[in-house]
Image (tube, rainbow over the protein chains, first blue to last red):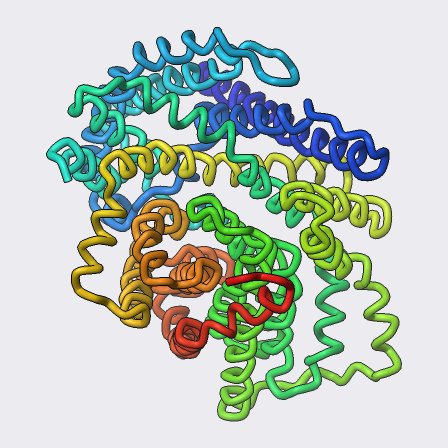
Length: 170
Length: 431
C-alpha cells in the first residue's frame, strides 16, 4: 500500500516535470518571437532549447507520465477477449519488448556516449548529455514491462482497456 | 523485400495486434530488423534521437494543442456559442445547425477533432438534449461528425504530420484545407436542413438583428485568433512554428486578461493535458522515424511505385484505390498511425503519377478524419458514447447518413482538385 502511494506521488511529480518542460518550450518560443520580430534581435539559443524540451518531453513522458490506458494501441482484439487471453497476449508482448529493448541497451549506450564528441551549436551542451534521455527511457520501459510481467504472473488483468481514454492528437 | 524486413514487419503487426502500444511495436520491430540484418542496433537510437532533434516543424504540434487548451474555457466557449446561435439558430433544427457552425469556428482555433468534441462539443451535447429537444443519440452523432471538421480547417495536427512525412509546405497545406473543411460543414448542414423538416426539429428563439453587433463584439477577441495565426503564416513574417507559438500566447493573453476565465491552476491543467497529448503523438512519431528508416533502407516505397507503374495506373484510379484503402484502414486503425506509416508508402507512387502533394495531403487527411467516426474503431464515437451515455449501436445508426454525405464530399474533392487547390493557387502556390 505504501509502495503504491509512493508510486502515485512519483507519478504526479513526473507529470509536474513534463508540464514544466512544455512550459519552458512555450516560454522559449515567446522569447524568440519577441526578440526576433519586436526587438529585431534574433537569438539562436531559444530554438535549440525548444527542440531539447520536445525530445525530453516525449521520452520522459513516455517513460514516466503516460499511463497504460492512454497509449495509442490497436485494441479491437486486446479489449474484446477474456481475461485469461488478455493476460497471455500481454505476456507475449511484454516479453518481446523486454528482450528487444534489452538487446538494444548496449548499442544504444555506445551510440549515445559516442556523441560526446559533439556539442550543441548554441548552448554548447555535450550531445551525449542531451541524448541520455533515450537511455533513461529504455531502462524505464524495460522496468515497466518487467513490472507488468510480474503482475501478469500473479494473475492480474492488464487493465480492461478504456478506449475513450486513448490520448490522440487527431 | 528481404527476410529481415518480412520478419520485422511480422513482428510489428503481431505485437500491435496483441495490444502493445504501436510506438513501441515499431521501435521493437526495427530493432529486430537491425539485429537480423547484422547492422548496428544503435542505429535505432540514432534515427530516433536525430529525427526528433532536427524536425523543427513538429514543435508546432504541442503549440497548437496548447493554444486550443487555453481557448477552451467555459466562458469563451459560451460567448462563441452565442455568436453562432445568433447566426443560424433561427432556422429549423437551429441548434443542430449551431453545432456545425461552432465546429467550423473552433476548427479555426484548434487542430484536433477529439479536443473539439471534448470541449465545445460536450457543451453542445448538453444544450441540444436539454428539455428533450433532440434525442441524445442524434445530438451525439452530430457532435461527433461535426468535430471531424476541426483538423481539416487550419490549424491542423494531421496536416502538420503530413507535411512532415511528405516535405510539403505546411502553409499551402493549411490553405488547401479551408475550402474542403467548409464543404464538409456545408453538406452536414444540408443534411440537417432535410432531416429537420422530416423529423420536425425545434427552432430557437430568434436573436434580434440589433443584438448581433454586441454578440459579435463579445466573441471578437477569440475570433481574432485564427486571423492572427493565418496572418502570420501567410505574410511569411514568421515560421509556421513561431506562428503557432504566437497563437498560443495570444490565446493565453485573451483568456487571462480579457475574459479573466483562466486561473493559475487552469494554466497548469492546460499544460499537463497538452503534455500528455504531445507525449502520446510524440511516441508514435518516434516509432515512425525509426521504422521509416528501415523502410527507406529496404527501398519499399520506390519498389511499390515501380510495381504499380507496370500496371499503368491512371492518377484517378490510384486516388480512388488509395481512398478506399484508407477508409477501410480507418475502420480499424488510429489515424496517426495511418498517416505516419501507411501514407509514406503511398507517397512516391502519388508523386510518380503527378498527383499534386497538397491535393493528396488534404484528401488523405479528410479521409483519415472520416475514419474517426467509422465503426467499429472510431475514437470520436467512443468519446461520444462516454460523454452522451448512449449505446454505440444507436450512435452509429445516427452517424451513418452523415457518413455517406461526407464520403460524397470526399469524392468531390478527390476528383475535382480545384476544390483543394483553388485557395493555395490564389495565394501563390505553383502546383
